[in-house]
Length: 269
View (cartoon, rainbow, N blue to C red):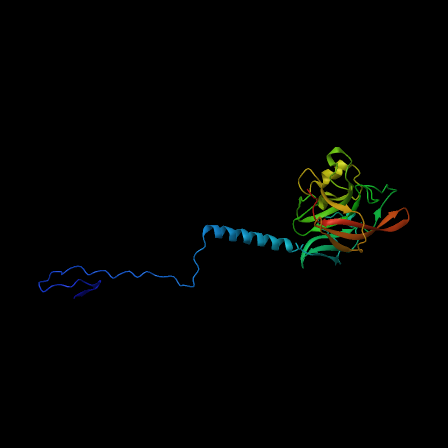
């Protein structure tokens, strides 16, 4: 028998001829282990997937949906002067508060007016607060893009907050159980502290915030038993409601006035 680099060659006879082909080695079948399981058939795979999906659904339903926590912190400095008129800046308290998402993410900062002048106002039913439509309530700063109660984008920046009432007309029937709102207007476009009594003019000014036809708004809510300067979560609507207190002035009389506003959250569909 001779060898080559490719392996063993066929044996030769004395005359050099090949005596015949070398028979191939028999193939030995590979047997599976007696303990191994046979592969599942398609019907079993389908049943397994169905069971897994059902189990996942049960687990998801049994776990509570946790909202990202928000908190309220005081701001011990005055509102930014950049873009804010001196006349409106003179109305503001030297300190404010801010809404913080999680540990450090600031949603917005708010500075209220030192006082809110009021006249005899009809409060009750759908109107919650005694303020004059169009009057300045304070300013708010959004350090990054936020959103209003209608889920419209509010670009980062400084805004005046003016009180407004939703008009009683066919276009707004059933859109809100109350009529009280705060309207956001870019501070560099809202220079005068005078009341903007005309609703169309007030809406047009506020619409500059979003670049849309509708003003940018924050919803005011009925007063609850919430503690002053606190934030609470209304789970059924996914709202974070802030309670703050300012002072109203009517003639020579000043009175504490609590207000509750949805600063994080949107109207339902």
